[in-house]
Length: 284
Ligand SMILES: *[C@@H]1O[C@H](CO)[C@@H](O)[C@H](O)[C@H]1NC(C)=O
Image (cartoon, helix red, strand yellow):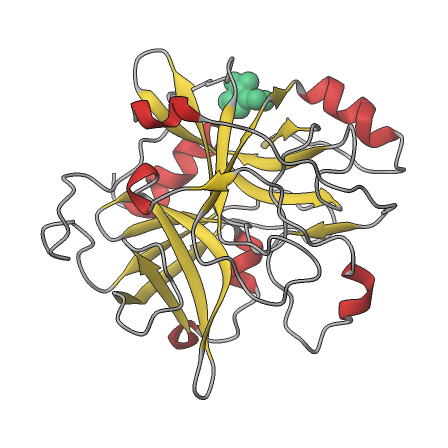
């Protein structure tokens, strides 16, 4: 965890005019790609090894001969992945959804690929983008020992009830690094983003029109770094007094990426602790 203290933030992102709101999963090619040109650049932290964010997973869709990364997620317990509802809803059949974890090079053919036994999605509203949270139960154990990985722990901690991040947080994912590239980055990327109060965030979004920051959402960024398409569902980890880093947010949506002054919007995980408990342990 201490390694997270090493951030060096250097990259500057060229800004483009953009006024439409997009969830941050990777659109399939048949979608009108032109609208997104110049906008789907991930913003930019640095390459990190998976051991810096061992909870990070890649959600992939299976095609005839390929697996394609389209969203991120985070392990929150053995076999359980936390992600965004809009990611899960974009997959027509659960047998086409796979989870890759424990590796940096998610495109490699020799990586652990997990099947999904069950997907539980909150009541996601496409119009308001409210309740953008889901959990996936995998068919097999994801404990490092079972994967023959060296590290002891790959499960991220949930935040405490009422968690409000005070310091900068870190968002990670394999989303595109620039609009010009049609290739995913070879390595997991991570960037530091500063949490922004919801009222301030609403003021920023008011400049762009009728966009509501609702309960259950939280904002971070607004500077040179941001999440972007392909990062959806992935974790925003923040330092918590007692617990070290906790998975405070889930990448949800934004306007463009790293649009000046406009933060990214995340699902506030702390707001959904009961929903998560209910999904994972329906009896208790
Ligand atoms: C997240 O939700 C919790 C619980 O509802 C709340 O106390 C906290 O202030 C929220 N965090 C942010 C950043 O809005």
